[in-house]
Amino acid sequence: MPGKKNASLKKPDMYEDLRDEGASKEKAARISNAAAQKGRSKSSVAAKGGRSGSYDDWTVPQLRKRAKELGLSNYSGKKKSELVSALRNH
Image (cartoon, rainbow, N blue to C red; front, side, top):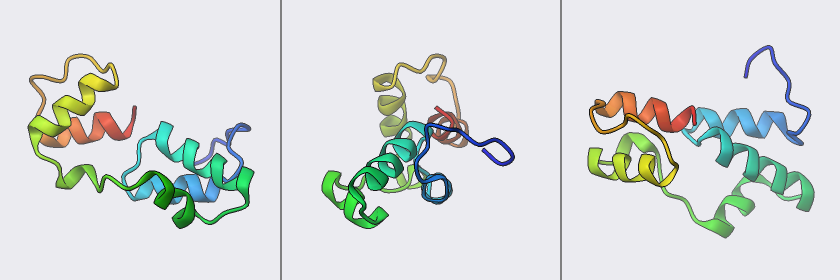
């Protein structure tokens, strides 16, 4: 999101930190906006819903399953790095 500000993000700095940690666009926006609404830090909001870890630590079958859950297409023939990128940029 460098250079482009999204008016719907209540805590853009937190959003960027979460994206750098590997969270998808949707998850980063949800967590940062929830933190802004409740006045909490990133860690307290993330602790509420748990943490799944970085996509880099997932296996290819786990990544494919997540891609299917998110409704992504053309994921079955992708390499691990391509799956991670697709999930992060979802």
